Structures are given as structure tokens and as C-alpha cells.
Image (cartoon, rainbow, N blue to C red; front, side, top):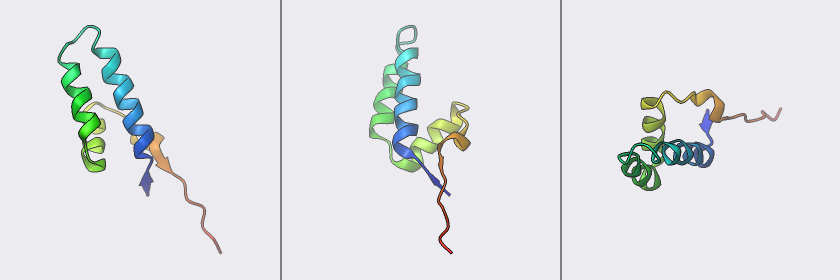
Length: 63
């Protein structure tokens, strides 16, 4: 299965962006997300209890 990395990245940036208003350390998380590889984004999402099922791309099979 493939994961929609762009949507995941956007949601992580929104998540940490919201947190930055009351937690200055979240700014470091934003920088980490912006520079992260796809595998690192998945790791960050898991560590922050994101439901990765939301980001799976459904591929239609051709018969």
C-alpha cells in the first residue's frame, strides 16, 4: 500500500503549527517535518498517534 505523503506532511504541519502557539518546542517539530523524508514522516506520524489508515491511497486493480 502507498501512503499519501503530501497529505500526511500537511496534516503534521497543521498539527505542530497549532501546538506552536502554546509550546515553543513545536517549532522544532515543524522544521523536522519540513525536512523529513517520507519514511521519517511516517515515523513522526506514528509517534504522534496519527491514524495512517487515513492516508492510504487506494489503487484500483486492472483486470
